[in-house]
Length: 193
Image (cartoon, rainbow, N blue to C red; front, side, top):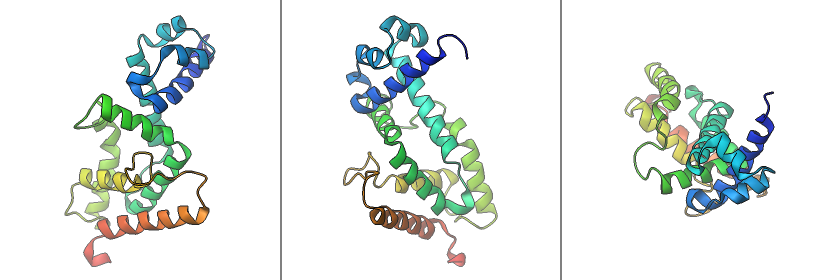
């Protein structure tokens, strides 16, 4: 471990919490530094600016969920449920994405490197479509974005109800069933149903 790695990691952890709670505009560098047991000079040395710090936090969070929830295009219902579970375990990701959408990129892709993040997922969906396992009347991008949206039905981005990890297990089981059923019915080729 290089000198400063522990401090950098503490700053990223504190910034993740701060940005998830207050957004980019509402986050305060002095709170981040204090919660990281660092000083503002260290924060600026590592990240340059509050905006750059947000980008680092957001990139790390996206990388975390991409790696935590790999896609299996032959099991899109399972993928959607795994995303639901990840949002319960790490609701900060959805909050960060919501702030990024509100304060940074109101339209289009959420990240500048979305094509890189999605390329293997889209290729996986295309292969499943070519094999007749996923309805090919939709583009791979339409499939991916819709499955993600369905998985977020009870996430912190919901405008109707946000689930909490502490909810009754039977409630989570029911939500998982709803998500998997909707995804299965939406993207299973008609002849396979």
